[in-house]
Amino acid sequence: QVQLVESGGGLVQPGDSLRLSCKASGRSFRDYRMGWFRLTPAKEREFVAAISWSSEVTYYADSVKGRFTISRDNAQSTVHLQMNSLKPEDTAVYYCAAAVSRKVNLRLPVSYDAWGQGTQVTVSS
Image (tube, rainbow, N blue to C red; front, side, top):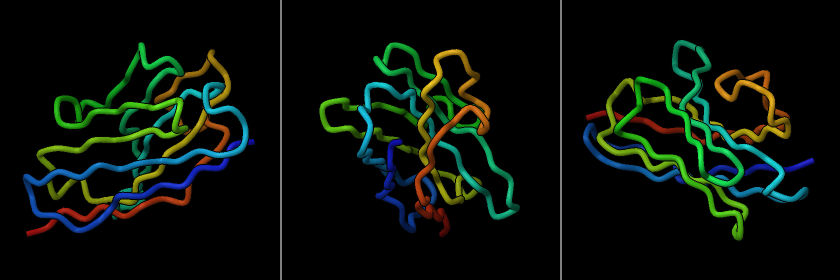
């Protein structure tokens, strides 16, 4: 099993940028496809982005496409979420997650086998 620890959250103003990181330990990082989700103040869990093990394929929610970029460094066992042009509606707790299976829909939370503890992102003026 892999363990995941997120970092990089904080309080920023609209239009600012943040870079979230998720460090994995335990089982080989290359075995996992990785995703980011967020839990909004309304307690809704939303898919944000996902990336294949080789970084060849990425997926984004429509609400973040063009503003957020997911990437991974397999040598460092880390996945990043670069968030630009942040909006108040991006305020949420952001979670990274790891999926072993290569036959699942990465937009669905149930597809993931391990989750981090979350990091708070607040966008407010």
